[in-house]
Amino acid sequence: MSTAVTENQNQDAQQTDDAGEEAIPTYDIVLRVRRYDPEFETEAHWDEWPLTMYGTDRVLDALHKVKWELDGSLSFRRSCAHGVCGSDAMRINGRNRLACKTLLKDLDLSKPILVEPIKGLPCEKDLIVDMEPFFQSYREIMPFLVNEDHTPTGERFQSQDDRARFDDTTKCILCAACTSSCPVFWTDGQYFGPAAIVNAHRFIFDSRDQAGDMRLEILNDKEGVWRCRTTFNCTEACPRGIQVTKAIAEVKKAVFASAL
Amino acid sequence: MSTPLKTKIQVPRSRDLEVDGVKYNRAGSSRSRFEMFAWLFMRMSGIVLIVLVFGHLFVNLMVGEGVHAVDFGFVGGKWANPFWQVWDLVMLWLAMLHGTNGIRVIIDDYAARNTTRFWLKVLLFVASAFVILLGTMVIFTFEPCPAGADPSLLASFCSAH
Image (cartoon, rainbow over all chains, first blue to last red; front, top):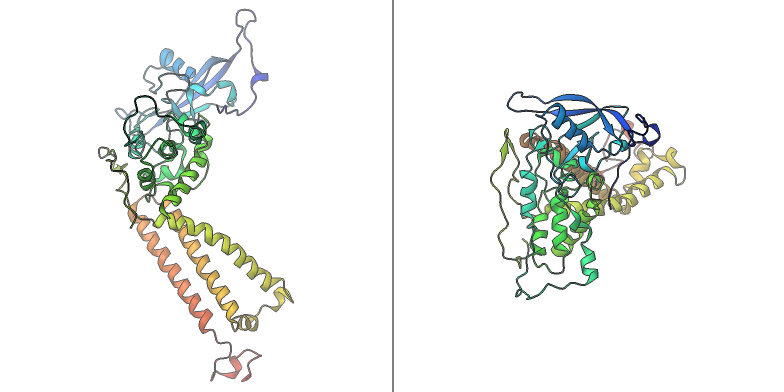
């Protein structure tokens, strides 16, 4: 399920400090972060910090070290810091990942580690982007259960097979790594984006839900599923390992089934 | 246009969002099935074109004398046969529409401004309509030995030559 992305094998090339005192090996890394502060500048620029980090550290720890010890003005989002909340999606070495799930030892440390905000969404400050366009698409596909039947006194039962049908797409944490990795979304931000389609998929294929026809109608839009070019950037970017492109293809098939 | 939906519920809407002149709201939903059929057409025409194009290449380049037989008379002979007229016509239309739709999609993906998009598409549609009409006309009106023409200009196989 988890997608550990490894660029090289640094495990063998570790430097250990004084043995005994430091059981965990340390690295010297260079962190390059794309900075932007609309109050003081009109253009973004790059800041660089050389850091000494431990072998167990993640990119998020490096960002924390900078913010807490070197430059408090560095801004980024993070909440749980353990790959669940989806706050810290960013572009690390050109690929969308969660900073809290990317271990430094898995990156190429011979070069500076490039950290940028995710693309396609308006940058507010440093690594913080305005997520509103992303959540707008999310709201439009109605990410909630619609069932007009009488409310049952207990739970709404579902067979294991029916539950398994949409299991993959329940994993989404709305980090926007997929949508902001999509070249079609970069152009004009009009495309619904992979995340919205994944979350529509979660309800379209839920046997308890009754508004599938409406979600399919919404995604049959000019900017809906048909703008997907199956470049698989979204599947590669997803920190939860969701088969995003496959989910989009399944929604395409469902649109056909309902329209023809 | 489409069947009425069973579900009667309001879709959540958002505030208008514009950042530095870039509109991030969708310009409004389009209740058209054009994109769906365009997507389907690309797949279907692609499959048919594989047969048509490779059949065309095989017949023109491999069968009999192969590529050395291809000349003015060879094309004239093929288009005297209704089978090859239909084959070439279908190939022309499918290839042109397939290619035009592909470029339309590329324009949609890469042109960021609406005016750029509009004019690129006008250029595309005019060019492709021109090629489709010209090609169709040639397939049906092709006359290898037009009557009353200057005999010195005619191909060697024409009786008037």
